[in-house]
Length: 460
Image 1 (tube, rainbow, N blue to C red):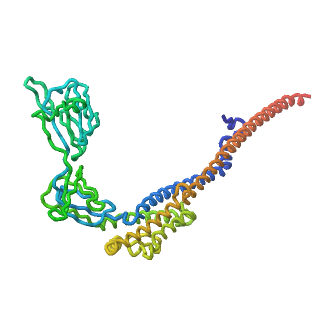
Image 2 (image 1 turned 90 degrees about the horizontal axis):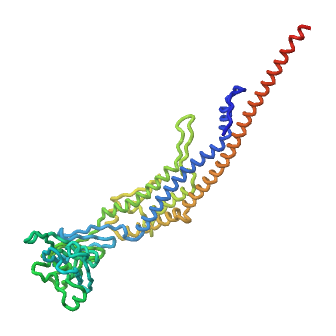
Image 3 (image 1 turned 180 degrees about the horizontal axis):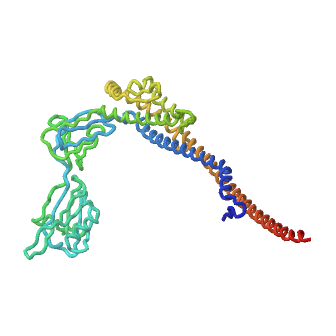
């Protein structure tokens, strides 16, 4: 706790005096703190740049695969047929006739007040002949449905209200649906355990005349080249035909008597937008580096020049040059500018969508190969700087952070030094007040002694 004797004897404002001197002593520490703050801003901007660069490297890796950014439109002549084209699709068209759509197997029991067997034991058998024995907690239709669902055998059961009996007792039907579409989802529900089933003594719940098959599980079926010598039947359990055309999935939901045309075509507009987005990301990064490297020149007298966060940073400058070179240099003798990707004399990267689309229509293979090579170079540059282990930009960030840590240690030492200096000043001024107090006391004593001697001398 600091000792404060402001003005007790000397009348001096000791606290303000000490503060003024400490402010002078603190100048080196404050300069260090300002330097830490400045480096913190630089590190933050470098980290942001590095994160953007890592994202660019990931996207460039994808774009470097020839044709990876190719886009397609996939359509059908009927809304009952849905077409989806993947990245590996190729343009083409084919006619199909849908004989029938995929169907889920579904049965319903007779209306019952409770399960007729006690205990309620049921055997489920699937299309493969596999069986599972289920025992419900009680004969209530809800418990029977619950036990079937918990068996996890691919059959879903629900107790559905079916009115009341003559005496007013609530009745329920057990509705059972296959979990999966197609013929493979068919099942049989038998009253009794597995041993009874094997012995042929278990009754099928559909044996009751009031029970019914709602729908029989069936695979979807389409015909290609229907009515010709090349007619071919293709089936699918879930209604989706994968790879009916290369990289194309076709899903049917209803039958058709007339052929339905499935068409896949190149979407030049979508491709142009995808390529433009990639180039725009690089352009934004180059622009950000330029902005961060620009110094603000004073507009009038008394103002100072303000440096950008990247001004004088050779690593960032080299990164900018590397990205620009990767985008603008020819790939196998073909300049990216021929497909609308160019950098002007001010270093601004731009994308001409109209020119790109034209090049894409005229020579799609060359555009794909050129852009793939461009993306590969961008990926190499991005990885060499942003790699988390030995990236050049990563190392730059680490170096800056090490400097901040070292400066922080210096600030801590200054804190100790200044605390000691303040204690010394407080002690010095406290002792000054004490010494002044003693001197005042001595002065008062001597004055009183002299005053006491003066009358006697006058009377002699």
